[in-house]
Length: 208
Ligand SMILES: [Mg+2]
Image 1 (cartoon, helix red, strand yellow):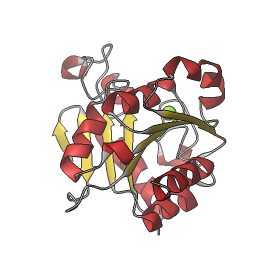
Image 2 (cartoon, rainbow, N blue to C red; image 1 turned 90 degrees about the vertical axis):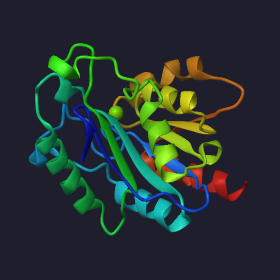
Image 3 (cartoon, rainbow, N blue to C red; image 1 turned 120 degrees about the vertical axis):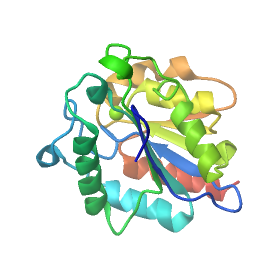
């Protein structure tokens, strides 16, 4: 559902006790990066994705997709196409499931009301903060996984404990600049795929 013209949001109900989450970028992390993915026929899962999400589900770690969708702002596609791709993605992930999805369809170069640099647009932390407050997430035990530095930056600004750059999507190109995000209170990691990334998270949360 749209909570405002540029924000698609579907989140599981808040849990009684605060729980850890992994915030996952979608394009280049769960699905192959194809420029402005909006057709179901172009959707290609990154191979370890279903098992990676299943491992999070089994470990009691919530899986929440946070994705910038500038293509909506630019008028390349609309929310119905986004939702169709999302439904197909979730069909292919099953029996694993996503606990939440938030997408930001605003962009400063967009059209009409969508032309703004919204607080939900990564690298800003709005999507993560919104999910955390709605779902009762424990950000201090949560992680961000992305293929761009702006994904990780959004997580760090929201207060997660760890950030993982995957080498899929744009990740390999971004790797040399990862050090620019270094700070005391966040663990920075690099993983080949979402499969390796989720194992890092599961080990880390189990050891707390
Ligand atoms: Mg991406």
